[in-house]
Image (tube, rainbow, N blue to C red; front, side):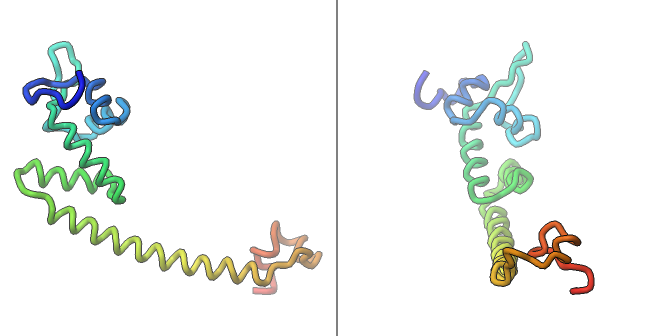
Length: 147
């Protein structure tokens, strides 16, 4: 079976994996934590069955993760969608928060970079013996009494 499955046909997990390009293990995990809830059911014999709409949901999850959203953030967005509302406002709020977090990470990384450059500028290939005796690496540790 190639292409998109018929709308009235439930898919087995292997078919979902094949169509979505996601591993069975990942799909099973998403189903277990509730990300795929409206699109899944169980057969009488207990097999997971998925509505074809699960493929759109998996594509959304993959894209959201590529933008840095966590599974819990994605779950919140999907809950808005599942309630019948368009979740674009919720997505925008999460992305704005992500931009703020990235800005803070960049500031922290710039501070760390400055600290590292400072350490490297004063690097001693042969530190004093008293410093070697009191530290593992005197270049990154302070010797007691020098603080």
